[in-house]
Amino acid sequence: MARTLPSALAAAAALVFAVVMPAAAAAQAPAPAPTSDGTSIDQCIAYLLMIVALVLTYLIHPLDASSPYKLF
Image 1 (cartoon, rainbow, N blue to C red):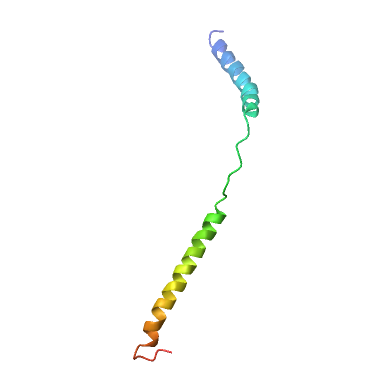
Image 2 (spheres, helix red, strand yellow):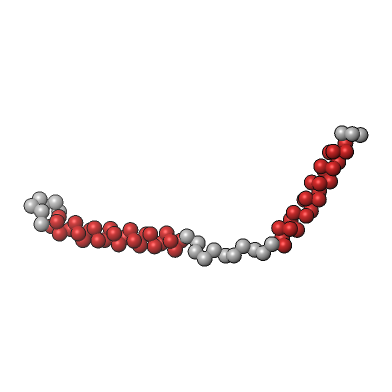
């Protein structure tokens, strides 16, 4: 009997926590919606990389066009 009392108390405590914890979680206010979902940040980075590539292309092209080697 001495061994069943602690396990009965543990089972009762687990049952109480199983009932009380979801109710406590439901009482909290929901989290606010995110202001930015990350896709706008990814799009900004992509645009910046495209602008850098365009600028580099126009900076390198005159050097390539004045080269004595006829590559194209």
